[in-house]
Image 1 (spheres, rainbow, N blue to C red):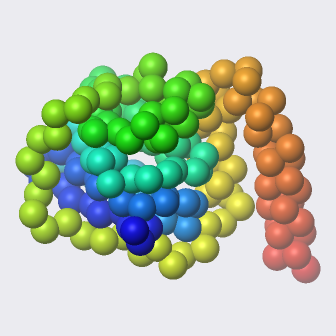
Image 2 (image 1 turned 180 degrees about the horizontal axis):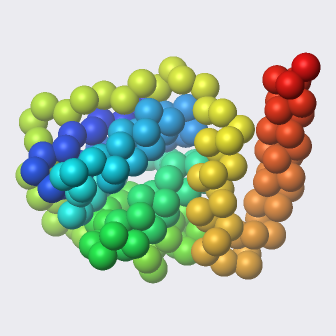
Length: 167
């Protein structure tokens, strides 16, 4: 199954559907859209994510889910709801500590018929990946240890890019 993320905002609800193996390259446009909606006059009251066809998700996508949930809770709403989470994805969410923070449901509500596909060909920037992983690192000491090397590598890459940009 192809890696795809679909998006739709209706009224005060954001609907997201993830299919296939979701990786960092699927997520940049999604993050931009969701945070644009948070910054709009009609800020979302809920985020519903259909994972019934998601076979795998990488840590960047999980960090994005954690970030969306954090933003939703900070605005006095939430937590977000994940629907029909496959066994593999459920195990990943539990390992990262996300399953305890969000609502998991097996009862998939009606999602909009027409949803916008997010661009999956975009290369994820080091800044985007670091930000997403920082959401996971905040959740537990285990995650901090798990992603310490990645955090260092990404921060060094960002610092090098900044030096090159100033030349």
